[in-house]
Length: 239
Image 1 (cartoon, one colour):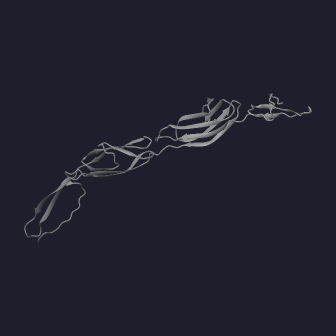
Image 2 (tube, one colour):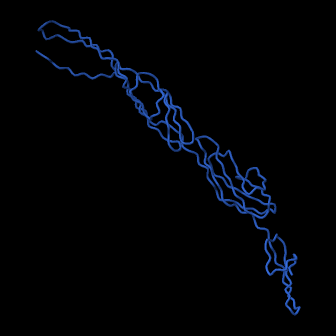
Image 3 (cartoon, helix red, strand yellow):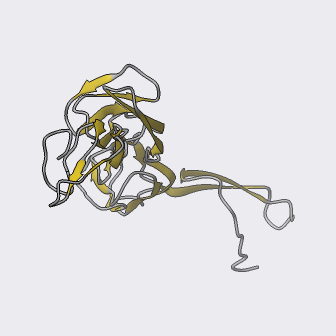
């Protein structure tokens, strides 16, 4: 006969408290046990789910903690901040920036469990690291823009101002071009405008200076058009 009224050999599903039992045999002989004390167990932090920040400089990280314990009411603190009181077995904290976080759970009896440190990570920013522009030849739309990029999360996609969706552009006429780069989380980067110009044809004006056969003649060359700096190679065709 147990002190809580149970008559089985073993008792289960007990709350905290003291318990004793009287054991009797068929002859009426008895044994009085000492008191057995069931103490309240501290809450335990179970599984923890960490969601990293989606975009650079955003603060949309999240930590959800599963709490295991016998007392139905908990006070949960994140990094020693304002306590959150809950009776749910799962408590979530949102709007978190990249950084380190620790969880402390205290139950109604004042028993405490503290988690290890969890880290919320932020992605590196999307950026264009190099741009190579080839200008258009005279009257031919053959300009190009080649970009190198880095950062972001997952696969990057491209939306150019001329409607193209490739990373690089070709067959360009003169004009201004920009690109919006989007990563797998929907984070975006807007480039500046890149200018493709049209090269003008090279034209030369030649003026002879000096007298015939006196070996004092000179050629005065004036170049216009093209894209400086220029290089020169003179060839004597006849003497």
